[in-house]
Image 1 (cartoon, rainbow, N blue to C red):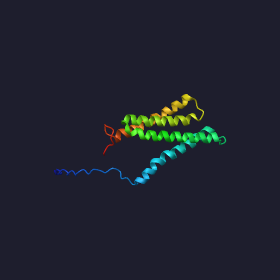
Image 2 (image 1 turned 90 degrees about the vertical axis):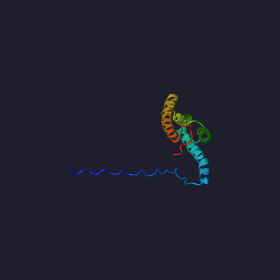
Image 3 (image 1 turned 90 degrees about the horizontal axis):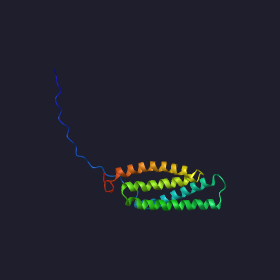
Image 4 (image 1 turned 45 degrees about the vertical axis):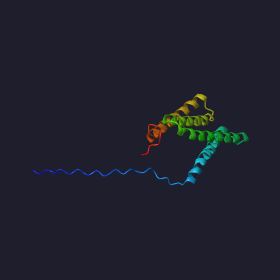
Length: 151
């Protein structure tokens, strides 16, 4: 009866470290995006808040003012969170983005005419989802001291 000859172990190839994702944009593009994202996001948020607030009625000066004030508030809050969040540990980093998402969603939802409790519970639901995603992201992309993982 024939038996298979034992195979020699395959040699282990040296592990080549994989580089991080290449940065395809130049510094100018990053600078523009650094300011454009909060401004455009604020304008979209303000338009959305004003549209919900007027409930399909005519556009008035107060409605336009409400939209611009909402836009400025959103953009300022976004810039503040973006500046402070990286200085915190990953748990607080996730909590800060959670609070931002919950507050901004809750404010928009309250413009629909829903009760305060309904707005709070809907905002808490959105905030819980944001917390899970943000915490997972920061937990898997930072080391124990909160520094970006070099992998």
